[in-house]
Length: 141
Image (cartoon, rainbow, N blue to C red):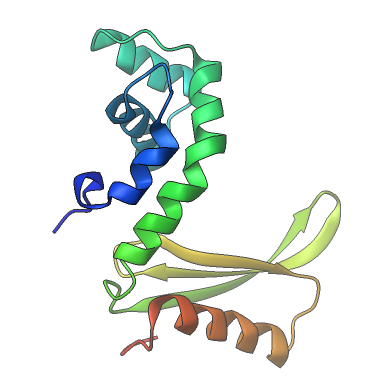
């Protein structure tokens, strides 16, 4: 069953006093997150549907509501992932080498990721522990 804001009244307070209705804000943030569009692309899509929103406004909405929506999605989908795939990669970030630990589900969605300076048993264990805490014990890893 899809997540519904109508059943979660406590989230309405975050949208009070805004110029745009919460539905428009949620659609804009949803387009940005789900389809990896730019702020300008989301603005153009909304404009085609009769809502004129500047790309900077969408960026502000992402900063304000992005984490809230992610936390609600994570809470809703806590037990929805049956298979995890873990990946460890050595990458360069801002000129320094580090290890990227990443977990994805069977649909290819990123469950979580973590950057570490070192590659050792403790780093991998702490990442796995965090996954189990967030999503519960999994049947297949």
